[in-house]
Amino acid sequence: MQKSPIKIYYAGIGSRETPEAVQAFFTKIAKRFAEQGFILRSGGAIGADMAFEKGCDDADGEKEIFLSWKNLNGSDSPLIVTSNEALVIAERFHPRWHTLSEKAKKLQARNVHQVLGWDLKTPTDFITCWTKYKDGKPVGGTTQALRIAHEYHIPVFNAGLYGNVKDIKRVLYNFIRTIAIIDVNVIFPDYVDKEGDANEYR
Image 1: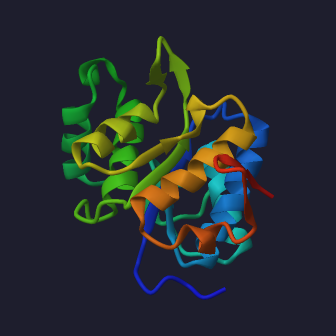
Image 2: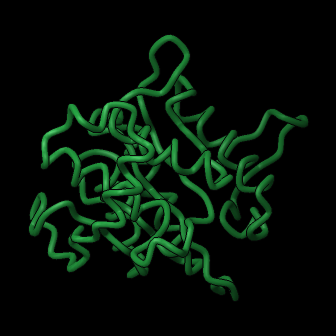
């Protein structure tokens, strides 16, 4: 496959409780993204993060894995959070910052890098994630990244809104088409349109 001529960063992140079927889909789509030259940003956490990273690795894709501390979950990424500026930004967006332990604060600072890059000046082009929802709102550590994304007008696709993988596939197709970073059919070459919105990604 021909890679995108422009550099595209996306954050592939989410809950440690991401369902296995969703993780499998994230691995598949991360491979597709990597084949097109998309650069993965993630955090080495168990669950969604590792699923995205596996797909990226399957295609020998480029990735930026930001770690709160060295060797997190066995990762050998050199991108260890040390920036005081990342901590300052994290404090700005976290509603209960002063209740967090130092370890938890570094986890939140890691989320800053996932959205804004290692230099904190190169925002991600879009985010694909899975979070739990409670009372109609996303919950969990990933919501820190989503708050920052909202401030920077970064498009977010949260698979946690949908009840099954078929719906996730359908809506992600339309999400990628809407943000128009690249021809969506390059990412979904085997997507079949049946009777308008009755679509299936095989």
